[in-house]
Every structure is written in C-alpha cells, then in structure tokens.
Length: 249
Image 1 (tube, rainbow, N blue to C red):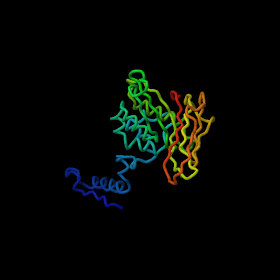
Image 2: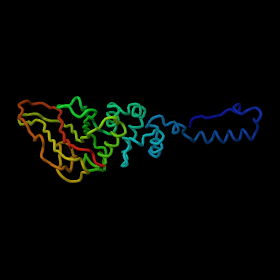
Image 3: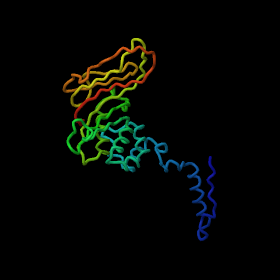
C-alpha cells in the first residue's frame, strides 16, 4: 500500500490539537484505500465502463452518437479524439475523422469534381463500412450502422452544402492468384438504403460475414466479371457493394 502520511504540520497552528489530528488521521486512512487516478479521466483508458455515459456528456459527444448507441470500443475512440472532432466540425477532414472512429471510410466528390459538373454547392459522399461495428448484428450493413453513419455525418458535415449519401461495404481479403485466379469482382446495385434483413447477400470467401440489403432494383450497374491470371502470387483485393440513395432513419 502506498504511504500516504499527512504530517500534522499541515494543520494550522490555531487548530492543531487532538480533534483536528484525529480528523486528519481518519482522512489518511480513507485516502490510503482510494485510487485517486479514477478521478483524473484524462483519456479513455482511465474511464471505467460505468463512467462512460458521464464522460460522453462531459465531452459533449452526444451529437456524434445515434440513438442506437455505439459499442464501448468505439465510444472510447471518440473520447480520445474529442478535441479533433469538435475542432474539425464542418469540414471534410472532420467528417473523415468522425467516420473513421466508427470503422467507416468516406469518399468525397464535390460538384466541381463530377462529370458532368453537378449542381452548385453540392457534394456526393460515399461511405464504406469496413468494420463489423455491432457484433450482435448478423450483417454488416445493418440499421444500426446506417444510423451511426448518418448521425456522424450530420454532426460533422458542412451544412452550407447539400449532401447526397451513398452507403457501401468494403472488404479486404487475400487473393491467391494462381493459374485459375480470377480478378476482383465489383457489384453496384441501385436502390434506397433501407433497413436490412433480407434480400441479396454478398459474402467474401475467407470472411464469415455477409452483407444483406434491400434495394428498389437489384440489377447491377456493373456485372461481376473476372479475368484468368497466369501469375502465382498473393495480392490484396477489395469488393464493394454500393447502395445509392439517401440513408433512411
């Protein structure tokens, strides 16, 4: 146990008598049994699970978290990046930072970058979920992920511009490119991003998780394609499922 002796010289001479010393002795006993570091809470590692709701309120993080909440790990990421989140609000960097903390990668395309040029003062934001954020959900693009993405974007985006959302899934897997290798596939069904639960499922061989979605039309814009490769190598590949339309609450 750490020695926490408090010398009696700490007591003012005018009241330095037996009763005051007894009070100081009692405080010393209590202090020896209490870990004062729990009051610091400088970063997420010093915050207990029970104290996380208080930390969220204390750091004004409620606006970044949807009504579904976030897993504890993601909440701790937000706590550790709280100053950056508030400082970068209203910028592309702010949106990118906020989404990265919940396992989502954004891609921005402003009106002047589009071909043909889009409506003035608008931008298209495609967000790719590449982390199974909610382990209690069977599919990657579940309603909680949709709400988490929309809430984060609303809290960090530039409100002087109109934003079009596109939600997709990004996978990373190892491809063994032998004589029978195939190139990476790309599927892009069109439709509103609504609450998943049934519909087409996209599964990636080595991954145990698939993506289920509902769409207004399931005709792929780009069909799945592959090309036989004659090299023996291991490469990294990505597969995307992009659902176009406004995220629905």
